[in-house]
Picture 1 (cartoon, one colour):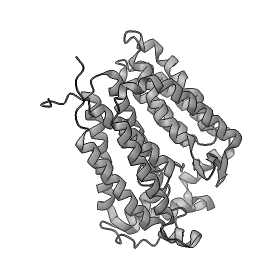
Picture 2 (spheres, helix red, strand yellow):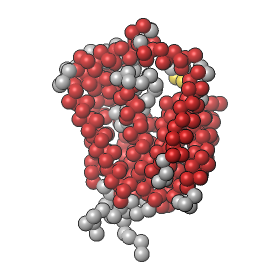
Picture 3 (cartoon, one colour):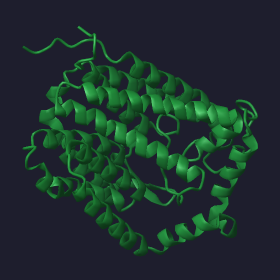
Picture 4 (tube, helix red, strand yellow):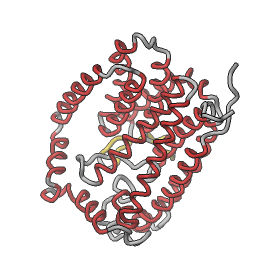
Length: 363
């Protein structure tokens, strides 16, 4: 007898809503100067992000109300659509700041790479959950091959997102498979492939040189200004709205480098609070994955957990110059309508799974 769905996970819902509100407040503070200078409207970025947030929350509510098992039948079609959209970007995409990552439909534009993330999560969860567990070790390579086409298409002009998508796939297979040795080979092969891929383009090798000595290169300006912002924040920051680096010193402060300006305005403790909030989010995903009624639901939660963890870690690592600079946004915080829309759609998936979880003491 199928168990009647309960209420969605309250901790997860509260963490998501807090991040959404926090993200809007911080975004307005970080983007007001750029909005005023470029568009004569200090709230320009805020209003666009608010629209995407409201739409995303509606999508989150709709998906969370569904039985997530229904989505298994759409896993393969959704993935095929992501392939078509990712291919269309290469042919008809719009280029901004030298990167061709957007598709336009009338007045609206979006990044298909953001849609590819939940599509891959659904595909992997559907395929892996239906595999014979006794043969799963031998099928790891075959399953990974399924996601390589979209990784290749996205990686053509967005290497960082391609790495995230591949990372999601590897994490989901790793969680579902009790054997560790095959993943050592995957790690070695992935490292070799990444080395070859980086060496094919001069600008990728240049990023490595800039990462080592950002002060010696003109393109290291953004990294240096971000580090200045982090250092000047101290323990408690300059105060919300009082950043100096966002006044044109940190390029596109509302995007990839927003964490640096958060450190400047809110200080070490403000940045620590944000990281603790992300940790709470990841913890709830782990709880949901552990108590999901089936492998499909467990892998959905694990895939979303992997996505958020990878993206948060990479963004903060880039901002602190721990790794070379790549275009990775901070989930729920950085400006980007497509990103927040599909992030909230993923939260809806996790909430849907949580409604079927068998928590101790829950009837």
